[in-house]
Amino acid sequence: MLYYLAQSIMDAAQGTEWEAAFSWLRLFRYISFRAGGALLTALAFSLWIGPYFIAWLKELKFGQDYADKAEEIGDLRTRLLSKKGTPTMGGVMIVLVLDLTAMLWAQWNTQVQLTMLSVLVLAGLGFHDDWAKVTKQNNLGITGGLKLVIQFLLAGFVAWYLYELPATQRVISEVMVPFYKYPVLVGTWGLVVGGILTVLCIVGSSNAVNLTDGLDGLAIGCTIIVCLVFAVLTYVAGNVKIAGYLEVPYVAGSGELTVFCAAMVGAGIGFLWFNCHPAKLFMGDTGSLALGGVLGIIAVLIQQPLILAIAGGVFVMEAVSVMMQRSWFKWTRHRTGTGRRLFRMAPIHHHFEKLGWYESQVVTRFYILCVVCAVVALATLKIR
Image (cartoon, rainbow, N blue to C red; front, side, top):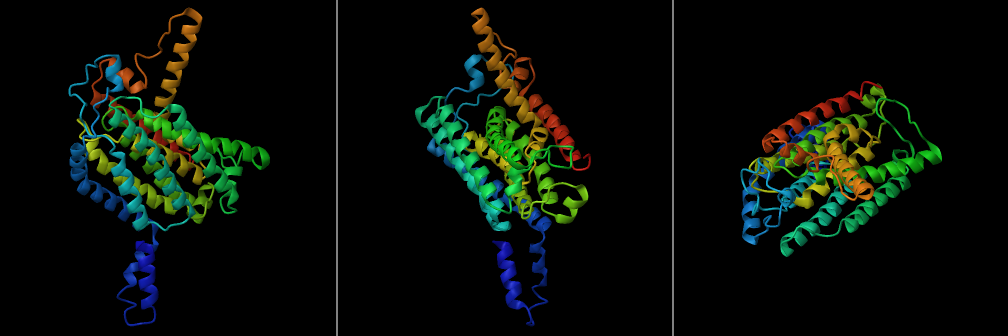
C-alpha cells in the first residue's frame, strides 16, 4: 500500500515544483527499505496490541485449561509453573499483524497474494482446532485426518496454480537440490517429483512447526531464525544480478517475499516478547500451522524446497522423533505384544525435559542448533 501511495505521489508531482520535495519517496522502491519498515512495523504493532489481546483472551476465558500433552504422561521436573489457564490462540495476533504489515509494505504480486491466502487458510484450520479444544475443554480438537486433508488440498492447489502460471511454471517442473547449481530433474519427471516435493514441503513444514510448539518460545524462536534465512534467500532469488552471480534460480517478483519474511520476523519477535518463559500467551495451532505452512510455501516459491529441510533442521528433528517413536512402538507391540519407546517422550524436546533439562535449557540449546542449521543453509548459496 505504501509503495503504491508513494508512486502515485511521485507521478503526480513529476514535472512540477513539488518534484524535488517528494523525491525521498523513491526509498519505497527499494526492497531493503520496505523490509526494514515491515519488520519494525510488525514488531511495534505486536508490542502495542499484545497486552490488550492477552486481556481480551482472558476475559473470554480462552485459556489452556485442557490437559497439556506433557502432563498426560507424568509431571516433568522442569514444569516449575503450571501452564493451565494461559491464554491460547495467540496465532490470531501473529497472523493479523503479519498480513496487515505485508499489505502495508509489500507490492501485491502473485507470490505475496498466494502466500497471504495460504496463511489465512492454515490459520483458519488451526483456529477451528483451538476453538474445539477450548470450548469442549479437552485436548482432542478436530481429527488429524481432517487436518491432513485440508493441508493436502491447499498444497495441491498451490502446486497446480504455480504450474499453470507461465512465470512460475519452472518452480514446479524443475527440481533443484542444495549444493548443486543445475536442475536435477526436468520435463515430465521433474513435474511429477516437483509436484510431490511441493506438497510434502508445505504439509510437512506446517505439521513440523506444530509439533515443535510445546515449550515456551521454542517454535516461534526457531521460526524467526529460519525466516531470517529465507529473507536472504528470497532477496537473492528476486535479484537477477545476484542470482546470476551466485548461480541460483532467479524467480521474478520473489524479492517481495523478503518484505513478507521481514514482517514475519517482526511479528514473531513481538509475539516472543509475550511467549518467552514463563509464557503469558500461547500461539496454539492457529499460529503453528500457519507459520509452518508459510515457510514451506516460501521455499517452494523460490524453487528451493529442500533447503527448508536444512534451515529448519530442528523442525525436521522434532517431526522425525515423533514418527520414529510411533513406528517403533507399533512395530515392537506387533512383534512382542508390548510397545516400546525409542525416546522417553516425543516430540524430542520433551525427551530432554525427561532427562532433567530445564525448559529454558532445552529452548536455548535448540535455538543454537537452529542457528547452526541456518548457517549451513546460507552456505548453499556459495557452495554449489
